[in-house]
Every structure is written in C-alpha cells, then in structure tokens.
Length: 92
Image (cartoon, rainbow, N blue to C red; front, side, top):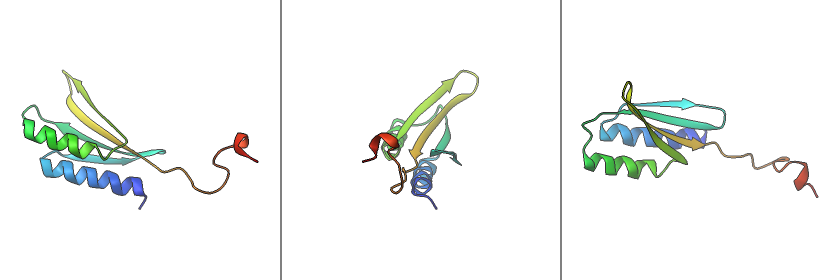
C-alpha cells in the first residue's frame, strides 16, 4: 500500500474517532480524504479535527447552503527517487 494511502487511512480513522464519516479516494498524484461535517460539531471536536488535519499536505472546508459542509484533506504521493526526476535541465 502506498505511503500516501497509509497516511490518508490514518487521517480517516482519526476523523472517524471524532464521529465523522469519511471517504478515502486514490488519485493520480495524491490520496484524498473527505468527510461531511455536521452543524453540531463541538469546539472540542473541531480542535481534534484540526490536529488530525495537520498530518495532511493540504486541507480545507467546502461549505454551501445547499450541500452543507465537506472537510477535505490531501496527502501527496511521493516523487520517484530514481531515474531522471529532474528533467533535462538537471542533467550533468
């Protein structure tokens, strides 16, 4: 299992422990985690959520009056460590 997937699964499990239902999705360059956030989430739970999200590379909250609030987090996949990762400008 890729390291990004493992990190995303840890984030998802910790969000689940706070009481949020999560979805984990594999993408080309990252693994994403999404969770619906209820209006009734306590201040203490928000603090825990923010602590959890510190483990992500990026995170945010999408809120609309029609669809409620969706929390998202992204864990980037690591760049390859072998081969020509720098491209032609980095060749010697």
